Image (cartoon, rainbow, N blue to C red):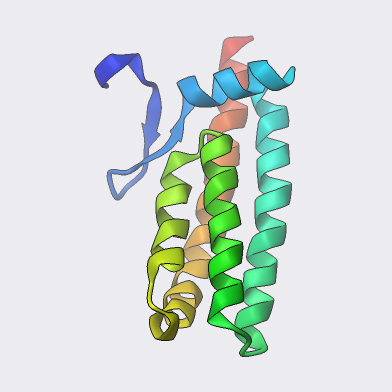
Length: 128
């Protein structure tokens, strides 16, 4: 990979986790990668559950946009750059399409968040 990045690739070719970035973030916080993974998964899955509840209750597309924006930011902050792209798709969809896009992506989002945590945790174990 260019510039020494250790981004793990997923089946769609997008880098899901930028391990170099994640290691720097974890180091700056005084954590290891497994701790960063736990922080990311707990917070992000909680927000994803809130998006799901908004969809089930037929609430505002604006609320879904705000939640997706927060998830994109936390993904970038945690080095899970591939997830930020997915959350941006929800955030940038028009108000009418946003709810449909979010509903279609939620199952994949949950799986990929867990995959990101697995990558981070395995990278930590590999460093021991």
